[in-house]
Image (tube, rainbow, N blue to C red; front, side, top):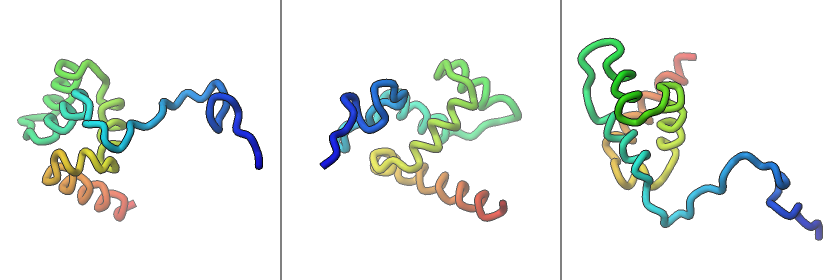
Length: 97
């Protein structure tokens, strides 16, 4: 049997945090990301402005978080309508590539 390095399979400098336990609820930030997606936006730039003002993150980081949330079972349980709609949009975009 092979022993794993002391701090996990990637060693002591693994930059990725451990995933949340399956029973852990969504974070406030995750719930806020889903709330932004439930809204409709009037014009170009309004959503990006809201992301910066409400969440304090860049739109690029927001979309990274959102994409991860779409694969998170907890997000699906918390907001199935929004998550399923966004999954369909994501799959349609992937299909056009």
